[in-house]
Image 1: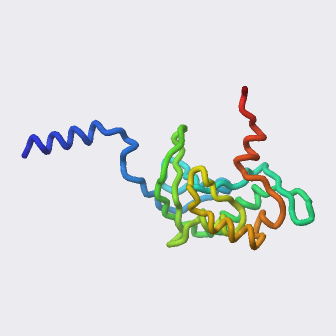
Image 2 (image 1 turned 135 degrees about the vertical axis):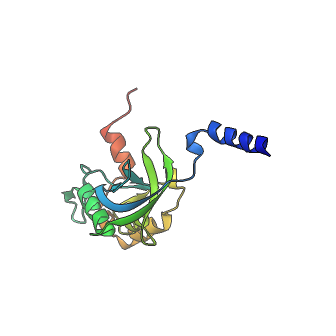
Image 3 (image 1 turned 60 degrees about the horizontal axis):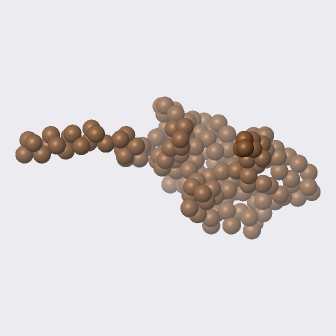
Length: 167
């Protein structure tokens, strides 16, 4: 029996760290940008999983075709969702090649990313979410909420245009 226990311990120690259970991060959140939170007590900032929102410098066009900084509006929308007390619980879903944490964050039982998309200030990042937030995006688009009231480019396309790949 002792050998079995040692064998299990040896296997556990040999496993790569990425096999660990999803980390839960809870605390008061501060909004960094429209898709990033700093949670008190967490070592790293948290990005909303499956959500892409305009960067601060990104512009969109409103219904009158006038440009505005939709990334700033999206950041304000996230701050309104998080609220003054800002208590959130985030469950890590993945990390990117740079080690950044991507998590589903909730305020109470409400998914913060889903609400940001439902309000029209972010998009379902299907490449990673596999359509998790497609219903919220469709609802916002049909109701012409947030940036959907005018014209806006998908944030990932906008970033690609700002930083084209070197060929």
